[in-house]
Length: 293
Image (tube, helix red, strand yellow):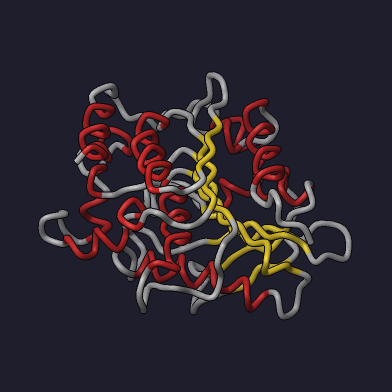
């Protein structure tokens, strides 16, 4: 399989975990300065299934980005706070942002299918929020960083999935994958180099050979064409994204790629940096292109 082969070849380029701490100090400093959200609300039964809504100034109705943080699908890594600077930057650009938390490895009920169920319900909760807040349900995009990029692509694939995983209440007009994979099975083995520990097999509850149906449902690459415009931001994991980008283009999907110069995994979600500003500007300009009020 071309996708798997390309990912394995890319993995050989990494002798140490890719997700180094370059850019983390600047990101943490920006996190501390982010204003409080408009609203914090649960979409599930506990705070692990909740989101922060940030509304821009004005009356709306506003386009909406559902933002999904990364952290190697694992609770020991970053949380929703990691994407609050990007959420605030998009808010300042006139976009409402629903920044969700979800259960990850180490949390009760996480893994397959719990983590995916959370993401699905978190995205669908935008329809609930729109009953009380000026949100434009015809202009909803999904954006995710790192592991959140995979989950964002998966959420965008739900119109192609059968119940209970799809099709969902929200059909996004675009999906933004920021430096994260579009397939799971090819990432087995590479995950230890990228994340510093195996995560995919624990996430899915078995190997691809043991859980083929689950891996198929959970991998956006297996549902191409998504029928949704895809915006891919490539930084340190860019080589791992290229096979998915090629497959998505070959399927007939509209795919655009942004490759910021000398980018690291975290400066691209730090709007105070040149690369982070470029990413925020690109999302604001492209996520709803051609989708007027």
